Length: 177
Image (cartoon, rainbow, N blue to C red; front, side, top):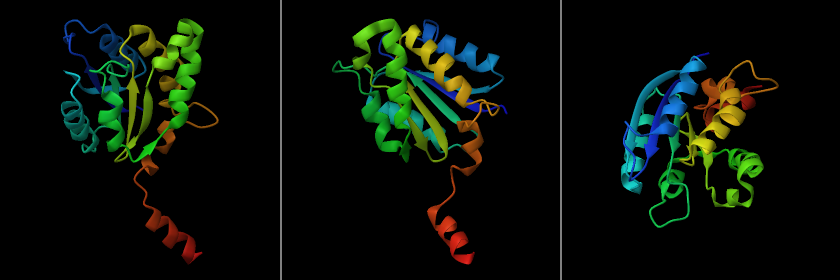
C-alpha cells in the first residue's frame, strides 16, 4: 500500500537546498514506495506551522504528514505547541518509544526531545526533531514499519480507512445488533 506523504521542515536557518533531514526522509519514504505529495520548509512560527499542517490535514489526498525540526527547548522551538491543538488523537507510545530508542545513541540528552505523533482529520502526523540521527531513528525504527501494511501483528497503514469513523455511527451499529 503506497501512502501519500507530505514533509515539512521547520527551521529558521535551513533552506530546501540545505536540508539533510528532509532529504533523508524523502529518500526513505520514496524507497519504501510511498508518494511524496509535497515538501515545504517554514520558519519556526507556530501560526505558519499550523497553516501548513492545516492545509495538508484538510486535503483528503494526504495520508501522512511528517515534520522535522522545532521540537527542542529553546525560545524559538514551538512545533509541539503549534501542532498539538490540531490533533484529534495522540499516539503517546510514539514519543515514548522514540526517546527509549534515542537513549541508545544520545543518552540522557533524549529527554530534551519533544517529538510526538497523532491523528488529525484522518491524517497521521509525526513530529520529529530536526537532527539527521533523530530522523533516521524515527523512520527506520518506528515509522517505516507502521506505514507498511505487511507489519504484524498490526500497523497504522491498516487503520487508515477507519480513521474517520464516527462514534455515532458505531453506537447506531451496535444498537441495531
